[in-house]
Image 1 (cartoon, helix red, strand yellow):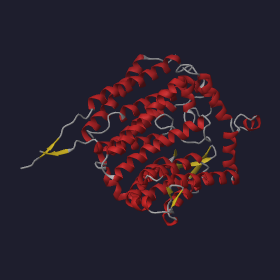
Image 2 (tube, rainbow, N blue to C red):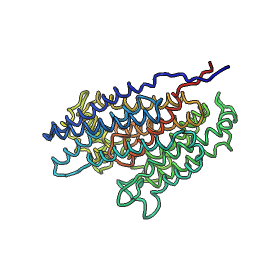
Image 3 (tube, rainbow, N blue to C red):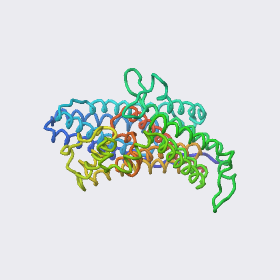
Image 4 (cartoon, rainbow, N blue to C red):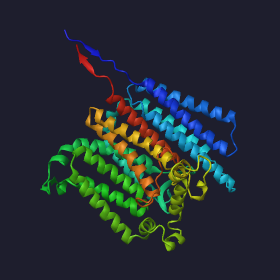
Length: 447
């Protein structure tokens, strides 16, 4: 008589403990260097910070060990390391501002958001016991995502900061609903595409060796394209527009494996962006700052001043950097948020910045590995979409700061100052951990 027995395989939780210990050491060392160079080093305070980091890492590990025992063992340490580096850099920028007579507490506030973000991730793991449940809310998530994306356009609710209208005022604080909207939209895209994958993948005429979609199947692509154009034109935010459309296009390719969808989608976005840059002055000014950043007329008008200062800051860092706590990040406007990559590039140099970017590569790689390993189609698209959202956001931010693409107002996940971004990205980590637990769960064997 056949019986079913569970094959026990190592979950790697001990390896996670070791990696978390390394991540905590990186975070504590970075803060210690910042405090030392600011003549603010107090061993009691640093010890308390280290103890808090150890407790938080331990709690996160125990929760994952209990409620997602087969989850990926590298995700959590990589995020802890990024978070620790970001907190240290923001604290360093606080000290730099203080030297110029401007008292800020960005570092302390961001520490609170990081702790809250970790708590939110734990709640996600406790509430979402099976990621497949989210498929039931496909269209609800789609509606919530579009509402969140367009909420800043509501008169009296949306607020404009630095020319972009991507925030709303809630209880006296600025909230960026687009950060949470991207998660809802990834859930919607995953549910929609897994249901309609066959129609989108198989039907359509062939041209130049590629099978192109039928006009009647282009409805979802056109709808997402129009929404992204609205964001670019009326919210004056090229970054969110590109992120939103890029996530959908990448997930569409994963679902259908048809390069023609990518060709059509990119063509539509480039055409729309070119039209917006020609017709709308605020979009055109972004393109001018990108294409002619070093032009004296453009710089003197203030259009490209922030970008150029960031470039010179990274150039002064060179290969190995000026040293954590020994640069001048305060010379770049919004060094703690939009331009934290430039701040890191100055003080850690190209070598340090590449190490930070490698941590993002690890996050995305583990997300894609999860997508490959999970058995259901919805989970594959969900993990891939969440991984693509991190990859695209980092590319858009770093590309803007280094002048590869036009500068945008997106925040660097886990590094830059901002509560909305911190909470949303910890939610993403929680969802990826949940899907990876399903993907790496031990199989059943008939014996």
